[in-house]
Length: 373
Image (tube, rainbow, N blue to C red; front, side, top):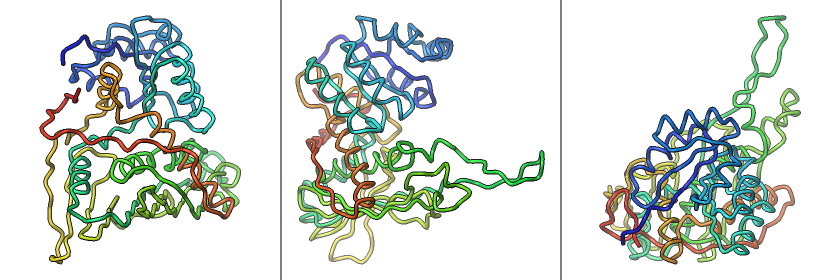
């Protein structure tokens, strides 16, 4: 189907804009026509760098009647407030992950979109990738039988560091990536959505959560005033489909190379890739073999294709079909993350109030940088 590309604006000129802006030029279904930031000079520089017609203030972008979708690339804490402002201005919104830091902000975005007849989507879109679409096809076709269980393991060491001041030789705390140890910024909000989106894509939404969480560094006197949120999680996810998943998510230990995601069925198991990536090597284990079998991707999008979720959203809005990286899934993911915190703090299972549609698989034969109607 041929139509005029959807006009899109970016708010936020951080590192991730360096991927979205050039990738947008590969898609024929949307155009980046403006980039905005609270630092107007940074927005103008980024626009010039990537050949975008306009670099401007956030207020100017939101007032532009040409722009239909806003890609929100601001810091985590601003995802909710900026997304709400864009929706109040009558723009559909595609938020980078996480959807929001707080449930109330996420729910407000969903409510505004419904009230105004506009739309909200959310990254990450790595589950569009060839490895993930191939894994989904294997599961849907019954290659591993009935899915029984899944495991996810996010281990990426990132700890505060103690150094010595050269000025007075006294000890002081110098935090590596200080903001990382703030609620809403730890791996649970930053990298956790990659894992949860992948699991929801493969297995559908989650029904119930329980967890044991630990604030490793905050238990140490030298760090207790800064690190006030857990950074190590051992969670259990009960999916609506009946699958039981385990989720180890930590910045406190050194990885030994455990698989990022595996799905176990009655007739076999699949070892998946790092969900931060679109493509990579899948492995299959069947009952009649002792070795893992390499499975090649049957789909496109095996390179860094961030922005495909925006393309899918633009086409979905235009054609009145569901888009895969939906706001409902983004909200469901942060609901799960909050529930992991709460289950440990409250010593109980958390029954989730949210749900979302399982994203539909991509069609076979879809070319890179295109999307189905």
